[in-house]
Length: 298
Image (cartoon, rainbow, N blue to C red; front, side, top):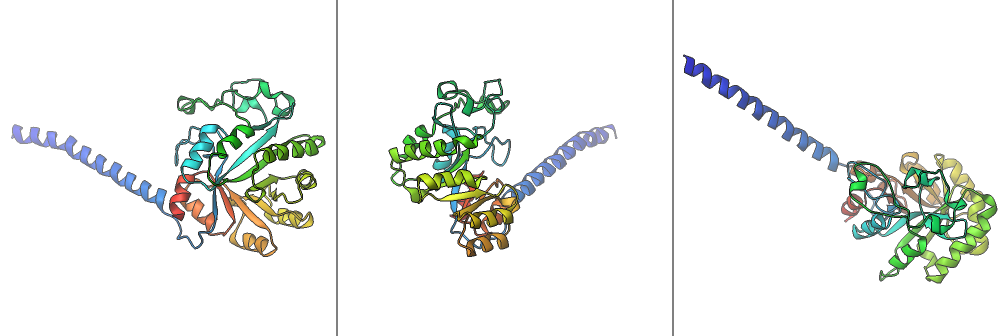
């Protein structure tokens, strides 16, 4: 009798272990299904653009420790099959176009003072180490780079990748100077205009680019209001609208395209959200998960 009791006691933990293992495996299976499930694609003629390269720092789906606009992030996006890149460009005090997303350097670099790039010379900005915190900083040694460094990198491709430039400037008095400086650099590297798009929420900033280069492709950042952006784009005879995928719909995108406007959407890490954006039929998506979107389209 005692022997039977001891055997039963040994079997109980084993049974609990098997039940626990089954639950974990079921959870992984369900999680995998949720990760890869998405609506059927009804449209595939859309450009895949790396959003600031490989997107923004992310712990999951996918894990991305590379800072936005960093060289490693930009290279990775192209290696994963992007048709091109979206980058954020700021102009230093002494007129050097620098790749950086945030308003202040303190938010993403080792520089603790809340300085803005337009108030500093390039030598004080270029080469600053990115700081994203744990665990991201364990996986990279990225530093701020210039737009010129990116153009040198893209010059190694047989065909120039598409390049969406998010114009970041906080002083309207520098609009003309910014446009002249940026276009001069792009002309230096003979970057084809048909592969370039300039993006800003301020029509006046975009018109400064048209003044300098009448053939420049100009997109208005919708800033959360797609319909208002559409009206402004038509009013100022701009080429298109750039909007967060969450603020758009298939009907809004179709309406804009019927009026002759290009549409670029941004965002999306999960396959389900990316599929929803693709099915809105935009011209391009600045996506946060290049690998997933490329695999879905191919």
